Image 1: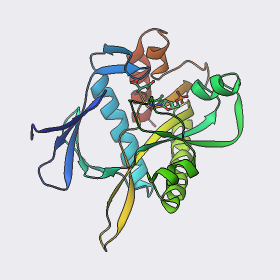
Image 2: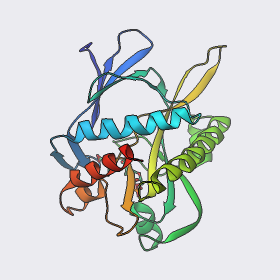
Image 3: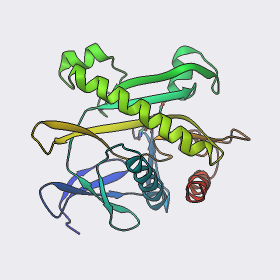
Image 4: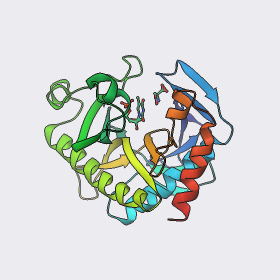
Length: 239
Ligand code: TMP
Ligand code: ASP
């Protein structure tokens, strides 16, 4: 594996890939919350998140969503297509929880009358503030047509993931997606799904008991964090 680190994030390391069009991403065991304020090494988290995210990306790709995943290298590393990351996080919510519940005073677990799509500026320095579409286009982070594509892709991903998770007895409460631009074969740019989809970036509740199977167990000190991650992986493998 190339060992030239291009970027080290809180939970993953990005290395130069074998050619100029790819990166290698390695999942770390580090868990962080509250913009890195709370931090702990959870042995085996990297492997679990890699396995869960790879399984989900492969499912999405089979169902027509383009992603950066080229191939799985080993149990913590993947080869991915090089992209220019669009500096917004796209958050999709099916049920009120987390910052949405806090900000708007809606009890966690309240069903939403429609799916919510939100954007946050990807900036650790600023604490990922929420940002609206006219603010995003005004700053020049993404164009209006790109934003409508991000919204469309996020909603389609939500439909596909909701259909997958319902079979596992897990409620998909909310999740965060990241996208990148890459060169389109015939010239121009296209937008593909990047980063990861794992219990670090989603809220998963057991459908029967509402037990949390995601990073909220770490954020809120609710017990064995990886127990839920193992449960999610096991159920996806049997879906
Ligand atoms: P929130 O309710 O804290 O805004 O989180 C919404 C979703 O986004 C939740 O599934 C967790 C995920 N998320 C991330 O992936 N990274 C983050 O930095 C934050 C704050 C949330
Ligand atoms: N990923 C973010 C952090 O490390 C926040 C979170 O997921 O709660 O701080």
